[in-house]
Image 1: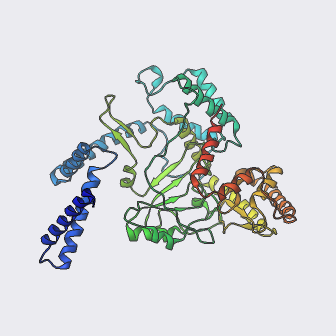
Image 2 (image 1 turned 30 degrees about the horizontal axis):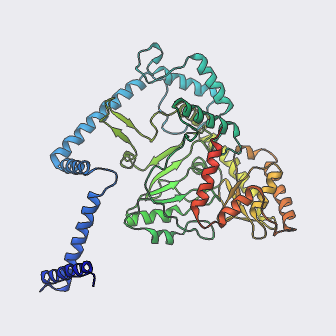
Image 3 (image 1 turned 90 degrees about the vertical axis):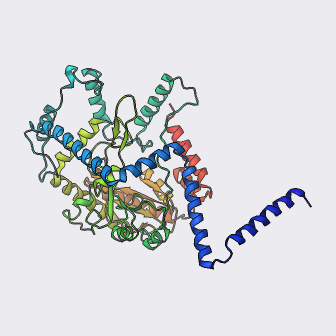
Length: 501
């Protein structure tokens, strides 16, 4: 017998004897409670000691100050100081507003404003700001001269509607972005391996919940997926893929029942949803009227028609919003605070977004919604009459998902590409969609798409088993690969190409 194994057995036997002696005379319930309590305590100690983000000293300091701040006298004093600071800041901003000739826009104007009217308000706002051109402001504005300002304005106008998310459509800005990255790498002495990229921000595990046949999330499955680590429930209004609106009311009830915040992803439909009823397309409420909804994301750069880079994240109250803010007071450069992950941000985009909202107003957005959703409904009705194709669920807004049970949907998308259409391919299941925008409301566009789908589907039905080609072949192959990391590598390679000079 191995002497080491003998020693281990003796130690284990001694431990067993000690444990039995310690619990001698106790009933089973007491043993269970003590074991449970010891386990919880041990796990808490391990989690505290082994936190990967902060040192033991930092965690001890944080815990200490958290305790001190929870003491009633200290807590009361801190809250009083916060209120004083807020009042002072409000006074400073209100002083800047006092000279303005126009009221604060707390909601969209009922009537559309002309460009001249919008510019008059903008000039009024600008007049109330600090004059940084006289050199009285430290840093802040890094002005490159009037000639550069004029150039930027011209370039902005030329590329106002571009989106590098779609490099196959906007190869111009893809090349510009790649060259900017390349030039910057060279300035910092980067070699051929150096590159520019973004990062995965939050260490949160996403739990995917299956959808029902109609494309809406399976709320029962979502309920089953909730556990003590669940930090948010998310529903789409509508989903990007097929334009389906999730049952937000049911999801919100889950959030209230289990004490979990509910986020509504209205990035795509954010500036259609508020105007659907007035446009003649009533829907169930999916906003803050629904108890349990705690946050909503809305892209103003989509159906609000503002420039790319503008988006809005709404919270039910300031307590939620506070969790987003970043503040660092230990920097030798002074206090640093930012409401978003980026520090410096493009003010021109904010100004242009603001002007866009004033220009359209409620009147303009209702009219746009009526035209865009009306066009989508027309395409939806037309697709339903075409043999060989099917709608993906029951879309209610601007996105129409299209698939087929007779031939590859990718072949249909490629066939439509040959006819001049640039549609969005989807996967799991194989399909594609058209996302209707203002340009699709022009006379004859919807009718031409319906006719082209009809002609292409009829041709594909003659040879329904033919193989995919082009991008359809890539998507088809990707769906058959069992290891998703391989598909990730493919996607990363695509991005490498996009950012190459």
